[in-house]
Length: 288
Image (cartoon, rainbow, N blue to C red; front, side, top):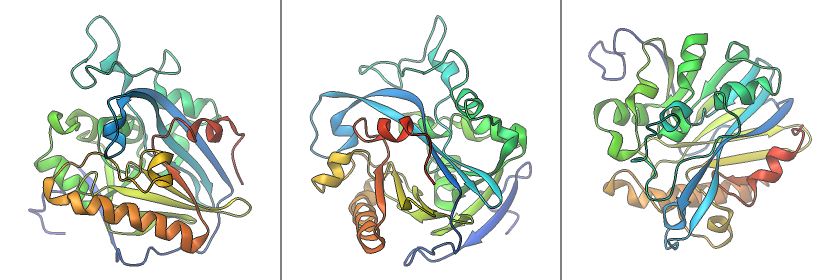
């Protein structure tokens, strides 16, 4: 990678993996266990999560996924940094007027969720972040401190480092940790055996979804913010926001790609912030 690459500041170690976005490669192996995590609850107007939605405020989960693979545990997304929303001066500007996020414990959301399953950041073999909005990047500091490699799309990290700011829901203190080790993906790619990145730009420039292959429960497609709500799947309505005006057509393309992949592969398509479908997944004792 050239020394002047904006994605390679000298303090960060990076690996690059490239692949086509035309056909998402299927990992040959299946995974051993799948655990769905709720790291917080957000108060979000429906129109943000679904184009044409109302001003009705939905209580939406902040989601992450743990997958046990042949190389160890994989963490997909990291939730919100609760510290900025606690104490005498919580950061209300990011959520007003809908309200502050709710957290399930008084501790750190990610650390407590991992501990509930007997894990710590040091037990994670590799991680990924679908995009760098603050409700997905808030736990990256724990992975940096544990030396865990994090997969991300090149275009997402480029936008986050060179262009995005607070007004775009990007908080640089989350993802500019000097110890973070990125594995850069250009489109679809294998994160770990049985776990694939599926390129779904539009909501953000380098958004990606995840495909997880399980031996018994089959193939799962986690849309993340490419499709927020089950209603978006049921009524073929795209997510309501995108970071760049030029990327607006990609929102529809990525939505259609995910629904097409789900149909072609008989996969379970899971919306990324759905208050209807996600709680039942987290209540289950994992999937095999």
